[in-house]
Length: 354
Image (cartoon, rainbow, N blue to C red; front, side):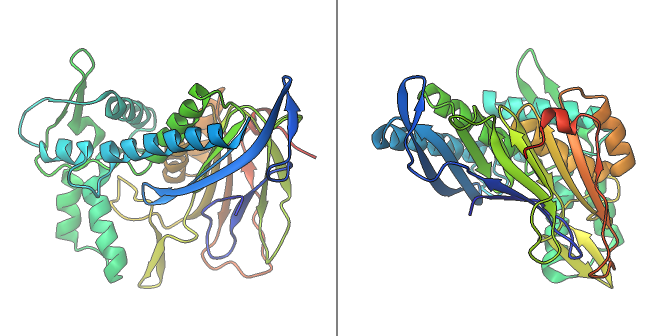
């Protein structure tokens, strides 16, 4: 399925559908070389990664795809919070020991980008949220809110200032013994960036990476200004109302259409607010356009926590970033509609495609 699906709410889903204008395996001329379109899909990091790109022949395409997927797998062994043997899990186990732990270049990149965004958003994005995420996963399974005592204990171990990074030594220190790091809001974006870089090293630049809703575009398909993506609020089988060209940029989404729980009549998102320790309760879908996927991925989560007004204010200060917000009531009827709020540079960074 060629699609980027945003995570909206039960009342309305925001869908961004990827439309590949060139049929599979059609031969096209590009810089005097004949290129063919190829698609490869694998489950990595617990999600579907899809590679769509143009290459000269099948053997070179297979080699490039294998290398890209291998790189994603390598990053999973670094950043997974499910795998007790991952580098991230081992770093979390050092919490409270007082030791500064050396980290790899990949983990360092994710940590530094995360901490920078945490500072800029006053903690709306926070990778130290691991204790709350674990608590909330259990709450979603059992459909029961965590006790006030457990919530308070988890919140005491959360806060981006409890994570100290030493740039000179490239080490990380977790100061609270109950801390656990969670890179769920940034790892897929970083993996998409790295997969595109691997394809480029194999001479493949006309490519699109789809990390289950986080899209990263390289150069456009032959003869096109970009990869054509449709974004539309759906009512039944509604067609996309906004089409955009995406080239050399990323687009990412965040919301709660499929990952949520209803407890005592209140619908909670899977996205945890670091301040309250609970899932977000405001129905909001966010689409972010950014120069690379690590920023688009993490910022989509941050803007969901910030909300529309603070989110728009934040985005307008970032010349290379744009965002679209769709908000709705938890009890919106089937005929009611919500109007998107769009930052001023959205059409500039993701030009309208007719």
